[in-house]
Image (cartoon, rainbow, N blue to C red; front, side, top):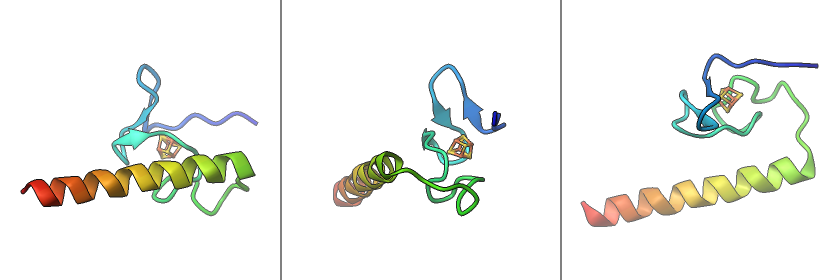
Length: 63
Ligand code: SF4
């Protein structure tokens, strides 16, 4: 199966919709709930969400 997403910036591998890394099936992705995720992908998503939560916390503390 091939899939091309209109939100994917191929040069940077950034999702233009979520404004961070493209990981198919992550929360907010057009494929969320429509694809089965491997254990490795679930770990990637958990790491990304942890990183994003940390950045949000730092931003709130800095403002
Ligand atoms: S995360 Fe999902 S919506 Fe975003 S670019 Fe990747 S496939 Fe598309």
